[in-house]
Length: 392
Image (tube, rainbow, N blue to C red; front, side, top):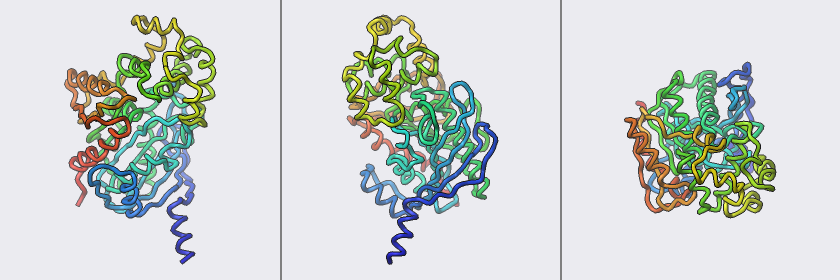
């Protein structure tokens, strides 16, 4: 009995299976694959119960979870390593692919390929329903070094799309049939990444896939006109964290000094705080509760007056609302969300519809940031199921 228990513990905690699949430093080429977890269906059903997902979300199978390391490109177009989660259902054939883009984390290892809570929930909800579940860690997180380019649209699209290509190599080399039906899903920062991915894929294509549907929950879209001004208001305790994270990333990406927009000591503090080793609580202890107190008066005066600054141009360059989705896109939001404004989804849907985009904004009720995401998940799961029927 003890031997069985130890064997089961080994399976559930993960076994390293290094891959010999290595390629030249080109985007979308798989570098390595490591099995990190093995979950039976009963574990996924238990996880569903403990996370209190609303509605009855059926779990059909267990899954094996792998960390894929692969090549992608950074904001300068240079090759860089990234990592992400692949959850492979135990029972096949598969319905299709779900690419899940996670929400904000400041910790390098609090990501899907390290079996984070949201990574396991996504695996249960979608790999447990016989989807191939993919979840990029993003640049600067997981196995990727350097800064995380927070809310940088092109970097997020690169990381997500190149994980799909790396996953194709993984399944091909293991003799697993590849399901071409692609579904995208993202929460908060991941919703921004999801929109960036759909826009890129519909413009350029990804061989072997076709987008069936996409969905976001509690996501920012219009950074310059909605997201940034809303966060400056400081209605949520996390707003200073979001803004510090973003400014620190944009300053490096666009080659601008942090001291041109941030007050001391925050212009130097954000470099240390957003190094992947500090959690929300540690960052909140340093940054002011009023986000405007982080910024130089001259910058705030210019921003409030609508005058151009390098930061306002960077915000505008990373919008993800000014395009027309071809595949159906649903933007879920909660009216009690103090982290991301409900009007971000509402206004984005209106702008996309004006361009003849296939989009719908959906109100999930008077729910806060995380509650709205949990409420949206089961709606999204059943919507995806209807569009991706199980093969015979």
